[in-house]
Length: 192
Image: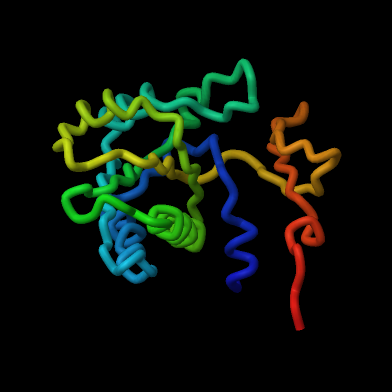
């Protein structure tokens, strides 16, 4: 798979084949990719906690909100939940500013997972205080994101955005549709 295909295949998957486990070594490998990405001022202030433990995963799941545009959907049902999680944290004892490190790192971790046949979803709607307590995190580690990971159990398709409507949706066959702006709406100018 070339890079363009890898990026296009990296969708926000929210339903997984929960029985297909992910190993701790796989999480370590994907997190390890973040070591090689750029970091503002080269501070490298991000830390990670990974879980492949079903009991801990169940506790993490309860602290997340899923797919805000899909009203009435409480998230994946049992059997469709993530097989693993990565909690992305900012270590404030290293630096007060994380710049854009978290975005670069999270995208890189997800691209590594997709390359290996998995998928994920970046979740920002997290009960951070309860998750920090569950993971027994020290105060200098600020939770930024939770990455849900597993073998995708859904089809996600990209389509052209209509009427500036950014809301994703599911059709009657549970295919997840994600509208994207056309390229000519993204490029303000290219100066020769």
